Length: 179
Image (cartoon, rainbow, N blue to C red; front, side, top):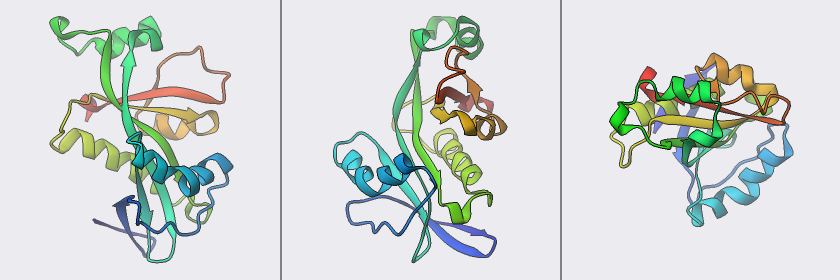
């Protein structure tokens, strides 16, 4: 699917398959680089996650992986649970709510600060809020590296709890009903 041009760079987004070539990629974080190179196709084969790549004919610009998730009452503060459950009808309230997890999201260092991360988050929101879903999904979740939580906050995500504020990653969510 052709999505457009950013700074005159033509790119496409494609669902990763076993045959998809993975061009050189370096986002500056070894674990994210290694996931794309070594694990993304294994996760696909094992039905754990689906990875999408943004690429040109010669370069992988960015990638992200999606998997099923949930927000459970035990995973969030009482205040946050009440806030996110408020719009769910009382007779429909459960101990958890369906979600999709952005398991990995990385942008090549050469393309950083151009807006590809924002484009990816918008794409995922649009995919789950506007596309006919094959299963219900109310929230998008992410375990964001502490140094990029500002990015997710600017894109409408909220923290699930304050108990992880000193951790390497922070659990965050976005409510698709706010679109």
